[in-house]
Length: 389
Image (cartoon, one colour):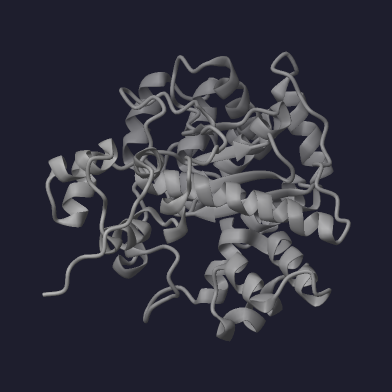
C-alpha cells in the first residue's frame, strides 16, 4: 500500500481555515474519518496532515488547496454586526451562511474591480440616513424615487415581478443584490455598505414575499450605512432601535399607512377571512402576516384576533430539491433550475453586465468570466442573453 504524502502547514493557518468555515474539531474528524486527537495534533503542530486530508478539507471548506499553504492566516473583514437576536447564537452562524458571507465579500471585491476597469460608478446613488430620521418619510421618498405607485404595485403579475422591479431600481443606484441559499432559521439577509459597490444578500430559501420585505429591510441598513446580518421580522417585540427602524422603513415602503387604511376600510366586513387575505396578498405582493400586523397596528383588529389568525399563516421553509441542497455551486442537475436562470437569480443583471463588458473589452479572460459567474461555457451565451443590462 502506497505511503500517504504528508504536507507541512502552519498550524495557525490550518486552525483558521477550520474556524472561518464554521467547523468544529469533531466535524473535521468525522469528515476525515479520524479521531479528534489527530485533528488536535495537526492544529498543535505535532502532526502533519496528508495531502488527501487537505484536499478533502479544501472541498469541505470551499477554499482553494493553496489556502492551506499560506505562511500566515489571511486577514479577512469581520462578519457583519449580528442583529438576529437568536438565543445563544450571537456571532455563531450556520456553515452555509458563513460560505455565503465569504462569497458575497468576494463578489463585492470583484464587482468593484470590474466597475473600475470600465469607469463605472461604484458609490451608491443614495443619501445616508440616520436613526433620528423618520423611516416613514424616507419610505415615501423612495417609493417616489422608485416610481412605485399603488396602481403599479397592483399591476405586477406576481410577487417575483415586483421583486425584480425593485432589484433593478437598486442596481440602478449601484447596489448589488445577490440571492444565495442560507437557512432561513439562521439568517434571512445581510447588508455590506462598508465597501463599494454596496451589496445585500437575501436567502433564496425564503418565500418571495418575505424576500421582498427583507430586501427593503436590508436597503434600510444600507441607507444607515450599517453592515449587518439579521432576521427581518416586524412581529418580534423588543427589537433594538436599528432593527425596529429598518422594519418600519420596509413595512411603510411596501404598504404606506394611507394606502393600508383605505384598503382595510374597503374590506372591513371580511378583513381576516382567508379569501380576503389571499386576494390582498396577491394584489399588493406582501405576506399575509404583514397585512395582519398592519391591521392590528392600525386598530382594525385586536391583538387577540391578530394572534389567532396569524396561526393560519406560520411561515414554512420552501422545499429545495435534494440535489440542489447538496452543493449550491454545482451546475444544475436533471430536474433542477436551469443554470442560466439560477445565475441570473443569484447575481442579478448588473453583475452579469459588469462581467460581460469587461470580457468584451479584454479586461478579463473567458475563464475569468465563467469563474465569476460560476457557470460552464455552454451556459455563457444564455446568461448574457437573459441579462437586460
